[in-house]
Length: 254
Image 1 (cartoon, one colour):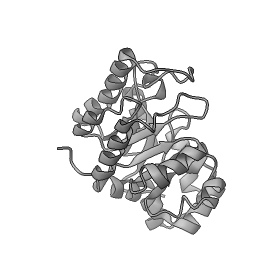
Image 2: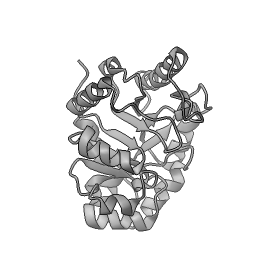
Image 3: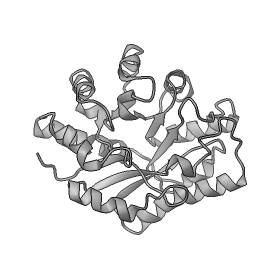
Image 4: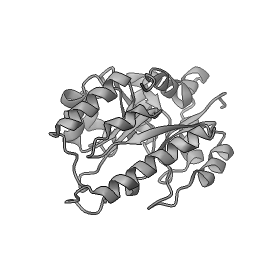
């Protein structure tokens, strides 16, 4: 099954604390027939994920800005990529003036926490919502519900892995998260059974293809979508249409 355009919506790319240069990613995409991708900085370039009590500092702020801007530089150089801003606890709202196409918001339950009570967090989320920047949200189950129901109820949310690391697909389904019009999911590392259930109940217009490279290989994750035997229109919606619709709604920076 082919499509004129195939976009991997979930790839980690960075060259500081992780050896994930785009020069090594690009051939994997070409070999798989993937035409574009959404890039996030690796977690290791954003905060010390091994220190639960990590406190932000100038060194990490500089590393974070360099990691995010590496992606902007790739886009500016003409690579077929959509750069996402990885947000952490400095809530650097001034970065939203740059041409990012989405937001990465990520932590696991054993990692340092987001300071959700910081007034800067509220201002950041309000501006992200206003700009219609899609937020790839990977958080604990409780914080996922808090985020979508209270902190940013009108933001465009993409939950990766069909919720596999946000408390689980079925838990989010029972909580009514997938029913929200502004909540989408990506397929990275998800099971075919979960993909089929989601497509049947919520439709291809809410699902995005993603690989989570380097944790999943673009070609292998794309084959999982192909094996669903979707009709051509639904296949094209999942591998490109949904993410293009979200990115097309993003407001230009001031």
